[in-house]
Length: 142
Image 1 (tube, rainbow, N blue to C red):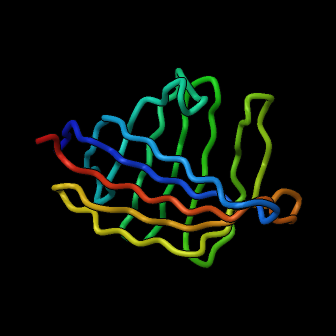
Image 2 (image 1 turned 30 degrees about the vertical axis):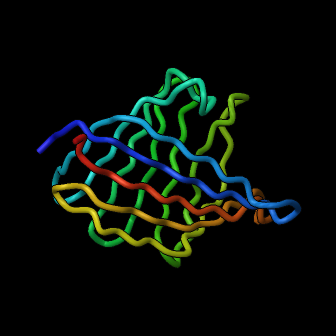
Image 3 (image 1 turned 45 degrees about the vertical axis):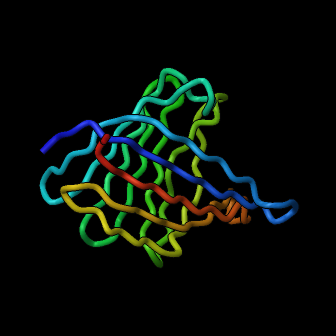
């Protein structure tokens, strides 16, 4: 199963000092299942600031979400409820290691598409950098 899909993504980012920043993206991409995990893959655009990169989100059955960006700004985030992972992240100036603490992962993904929601916090040197929420909806074009 590999199919072309419509992807809507809403990210909510809060640094605590200001109002939350909300970013919404509507794009096309590929959706497939491999070894029991679902994968969502799409090309980034100039609008996201990551033009020339490909982002792949994988969702394992145990509630583990991995977001990998390949290209000039490669990074990896692992979100798993109740677990803090150390991940590499590139802001365009070089790689840095950040802590990613998963708060929740909810998935209704099936072979037909569905919804994925995950919440996590980022820390740098154990100091809270931001609280984040991601909402992803996958569906086949009409």
